[in-house]
Length: 238
Image (cartoon, rainbow, N blue to C red; front, side, top):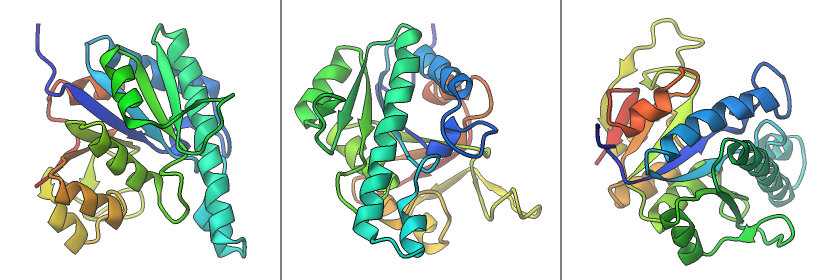
């Protein structure tokens, strides 16, 4: 039986991934489909953590651009990630996974507070851990939260699931001349201003030599292929 390429993985999902074809909110059918793929990976014995955004419910940066206080808007966005994490946790539980939602903003009746050693303990017990509420601080994106949490739990890789097949020279949805880049360094991502993750997240990964794998979530089986080390999407390395 093939051996997975990674022992511990942090999967970064956008909040929009849960919308499906809707313009807002959470599509339970889509959440179930994502949970099915994540559950399959978990059954391979891989220790799996998830960070999910909140853009399908509330985007702090967009609200602050319309006059809302940035810190307030970002706090609301972090609460949206808690809702998404709970939804995905519920879907994973229905697929037979034990899960834990750990939040950077304390809300003990809803989720556990984030404690690094507790998170690692859950992972070693085979539970899927969902990190919610970003870093708990305004002005930081869930990309940065994903990079931070990945380093705190000593993940082998960040797997960023997107709607395209990897990293391109431009947005392939709007630019038909965009070409795919199979492999590049963190520094090249920063220098070329490619929209892989925000600059803070990329810098954190570069400083700590943490690879990033960018792949298409919409292709069935891609999550499993990625963790098994098959050539899927694009890789950012040191």
